[in-house]
Structure formats: C-alpha cells, structure tokens
Image (cartoon, one colour):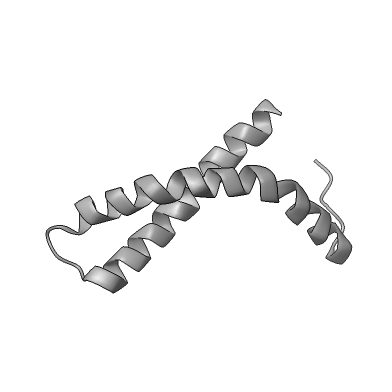
Length: 73
C-alpha cells in the first residue's frame, strides 16, 4: 500500500505539472508571469490528480490486463 501511495504521488505530480504548464501557457501565453500562474494551477491540479491516481489506478490496471499480459517483476 505504501508503494502505491508513493508511486501515485510521483506519477500524478509529474503528469499534473506538465499538463498544468501546457494548458496555462496555451490559455494565458508565455511571459514573465507564467511560472507563478503555472504553480497556482498546479497547486490545484496535483491533489486532484493524486486522488484520481489512487482510486483510478487499480481499475486502470484491471482494464489494461484485458488487452495485454502484465510484465513479470
């Protein structure tokens, strides 16, 4: 369980950060205030993404197993 929490946190931090940056840059432009706007957007997106990753992750793995065999670890 601890691994799932840490993994979901790292994955959702990276993905929500990248998506927040791209969407913020597209919607507001690239200028001197971009970093502040991006961090504000990411601060909202990250907790939502972590929550979603924690609860959607197990379902996504089950769905993926319908299409491909999971790797042996």
